[in-house]
Length: 307
Image (cartoon, rainbow, N blue to C red):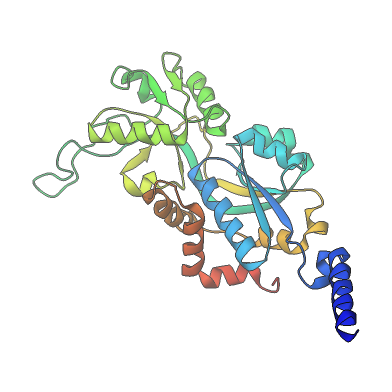
């Protein structure tokens, strides 16, 4: 009889546990944070680093949503994503901010000193220095965007771009009109295809002009320079902003506070991007963990009082 009572009591306990809410057992369900990002090196970097901090330090579950440039703005504005860390302002994403800005909460810059424009290799044929140790003249002689007209044949009248939704592509279409470059064709593609074309051109000392931006690992790998932009089509220094959906502050205050604090320098972002590119972008979360472990004081500042 005693054995029967014990078995019956244990069965009742199991039945009661089965109907209790998960949180009542001390194992609360992890909050889900949805981050929208683009397949740009800088966007991959910030999204995966924030994902790692939220998961490893704040106990969240993070869903990464890869989208096009306009789509990340629209997704956060409509509440299909909680946040994005890739709002390039005031120029690159100007049209998206005008369209969706009133529906978002701007937490301000997470990276200052960004830049976009047209970029060419800044390397010489053969030796990079002359007999007296002076730097040899670069094989691409164009120094400004207006120079593209003079050297159109050498550039094969091509500007190698990325995905058509990207803000830099919109600015480049504008630059083609402003600088009377109607003979040039803007080649749509991706960041991967653009950097592959750039790598091939540098290896073979061919003329090439691409849509480029900093921070980006390609500036660490090759000597590159921006073409002067006298009409300021591409703007000056840009900042990359964090945008969140309305209501996030009330629903996930710790997450919102961390996102508000999150910021890093172009040099710090480039370090992650160089690490990630070295493995062909195959292990971005691993690189985010590596960055966290090598910058513990900065991570601690982001999280002060939140754990």
